[in-house]
Image 1 (cartoon, chains in turn cyan, red):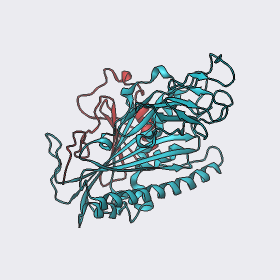
Image 2 (cartoon, helix red, strand yellow):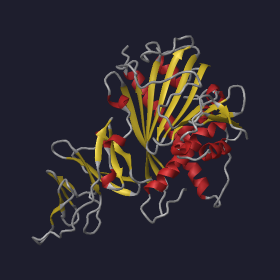
Image 3 (cartoon, chains in turn red, purple):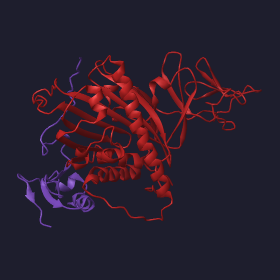
Image 4 (cartoon, one colour):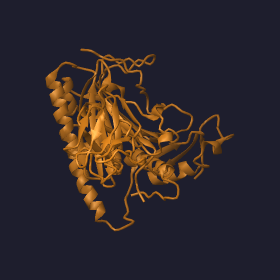
Length: 356
Length: 82
């Protein structure tokens, strides 16, 4: 039995991580080998040789042109996963092929489809266009999380924790105090949580990067595309700045930051925490870039420390432990319900999927 | 300072719908109170103090399938009696 949600697209890597070097990342318990062909196409296949299961990402395994050569006994595979050579004999067993994964490179991410190949539809991949769009400057990273991915979903859907866990960085009292509006599109598996603060303190994260002194209008509009992609549309402007134009949404006097997370389960109890911050101001200012990179990584690591501890605490709990939910959890509860539905729908026939 | 246009952005007053789609359910935290107002896409509304009870009601009313709402779409918001 598994808690993984199958038949979904997941971010396996940033495109910049994948090149002419064999690279491996485990997604939903499946070790995926990623590399680029000589023409630059990303390929994704099983990271286990069919012979004795040696990891193909492990040296001295290597690329030879557009073929992967296993470093243990020399089994050789093409970009389609088919074995084209085995040592000491001419006949290659017909079953000698690596499982391959549908793969799409989009918005700076490498997405892989985990599940039944015939169901893979590129149009289902949610977009984060700011990560690869002229006029936007991006900082990004990935932190390993020793916690189940659902804890990161809980964390990101309820930003009131910024006030307490991230005070002095992105949290101010107004975040926890301001009511939220939650919207759920069950069929599209999207949860939106909006918190609009009309008159709030400007946290150091935004004061330093934008140069704003004094109080701000701060909008946080979360858009979670279950299971993998989380977007936080953040609008910051000095109090009194006109709102975006009704007709075309133009908003020249405000600062916009798009915070993107890709939440990719690695194993049942570990998660790849991809994070990126895109901004539409001070595009060439290296000091701002460096500050946002360091600040956001600091914030992400604060979450990682907290969630790693929480995972340990939950594992020590008795079965059927109780939680208490309040108003701030409205969006997180919606996300949990959608994830549970997707889990049931994606479970292989005859296998009861279980929630963790 | 360069600014990109943001056609994706959709903002507005607290009760303005941001997500497109006919099957969107909305929950408003009623300003100045600790209460939540659940609004089904069929426009039936009900207030709650507990988000767990709120979701149980919203999803069971009258079913999670939008087809179950056929013929139930109301011209104006209507309070559902507890």
